[in-house]
Image (cartoon, rainbow, N blue to C red; front, side):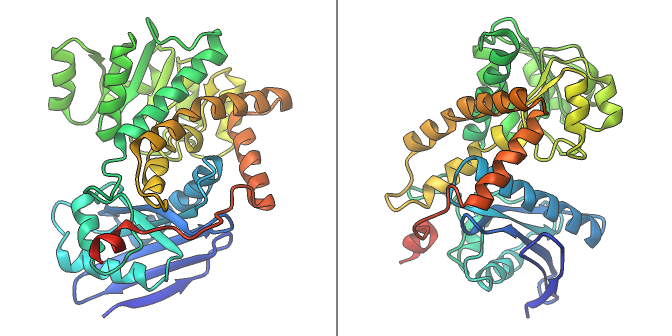
Length: 364
């Protein structure tokens, strides 16, 4: 039986701890801000060492989704769901369906989608008990968002190079990619065909060998990737990799990657600015996956063409952020945050119509 426990967290509209001992469910859903629309965010399934660590992660990710959604003018707010479980061992239909019931109990304030540990197959099971999911497989769904996230990062890298060099060309530029998972692999392929020189790392040595054996890239150990000399560093693994210690050892000119919450603290953006390293705020350039799944919720149904064209705008959005930062003599991260706060306060980009849920359509 589902048990809801409301947690009072300053700055968040609603945080709920959910348990169901009959199926082993331990989960948290955090709704950060819904001023522009329902809270949209992925469902992360991860074996957190403690509930406190899970709470810390879900709060950080939910707030990041508010910024990402507002920057993309998506008509959604920010939220996140986490299930404390090992996705390789603990996932079961009964656990996923219990989480679906938990989402449904929030009556549309939270809309879930794919994230680490939760794939399209899992969403299909969750959707048996709630319509409030997106990123669904099949003809009505948007499918894997990774290619769209990766293309947004390419747009961000090009805008960063344009600001640094006056040209967005990638040919001959050295790009260091931290993490070659779903997004990183797509990014690597794009950058290779654009003529970039690639340095990669990942904990999966077999995957790294695949690309180095084909001489598409050279590799370094994961502990060295943040300090290799390069034009652009692209963090695409876990968050919090940029802190006073790592920033001091950076040898890049710009940073543009898909990892969420790359800065350990917002003030670390000022440290990058002092080192004259141009930082592309992650919540600006990693919005491609969000854009892709939100297109699934439109009245006309999903269109990859519309999603692609919306992701293309990330290039100009980032140039605007860099322009505001330069004009105000502040960091790009602070400039982007200021833009988000203005949009939230003025309701800029607020949703005017209800989302159309393809999960409900497919079951009707």
